[in-house]
Image (cartoon, rainbow, N blue to C red; front, side):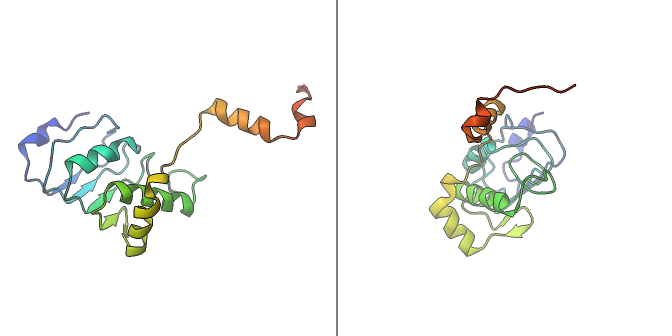
Length: 152
């Protein structure tokens, strides 16, 4: 998927590219007047935020609902409001001029928290083998030493 044709639209102010299977390899041209961008239901993670900060300096309205980057309960039942709030802090830390993120207005309190803690709010998923090792380490020692017996 490519949006290279946007180079001809340097004065573009709004861009809606929902449901296009766009991923982190997406590269937008510099769009200095773009203030609204919706990338809902694509395949985007946090890797794209740095690029957006560079090429969309006037961005005020951003929606990433339905992407890996946006942890909400509509996409994954193991996410909660705290996960979503951490995501908001991280995005606001990267894109400091946002007024709206997803469906909610950015509050002054959120902006202050993002400035103070946003850099540390990136959600990092451990690999499955790391999770298995952590689970094993959290088990009591006497259980770790037991062999698993399969009952048929």
